[in-house]
Image 1 (cartoon, rainbow, N blue to C red):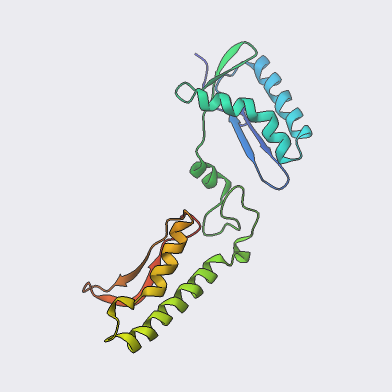
Image 2 (cartoon, helix red, strand yellow):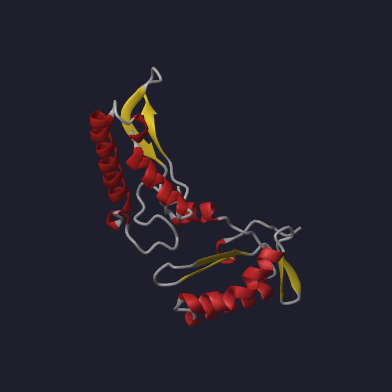
Length: 191
């Protein structure tokens, strides 16, 4: 019986210089003739593909076939059916060492270094300013217009939601269940 455990020579990896796209394939069939043909094809792809568009155009049909055959993941190579393994984005992030405490980029396709991302800081500053603005108005208008308390923050959240982005702001609770005076919110980055 053939050994179906993959060996190092069974793994092929294509990565562009800027790591925009990564395609990882694993062969489960150990036929040496097919392995040599497969290796030559991968090596020729590595030499040809320097740009993301070339990779996408070359792999478009294969990716469409993968989506169509999601239940039975096999492809025909040299007139033999080959089992393949589809890897989810989360797994690819783990094996590439991304989205972790020591990673410099947050995803496979991100071109902005984590130290250059300013949206989190800008969001915090904007929300802190609106909360402070609402607090100042609450002290002034507490008796005259109680419905206006928190109005600026609510309007900002509604405006962001109208753009199609789910966004919520809430006050954190203490251990006794009362408001702590600090706020938290959902991320605009999608996590």
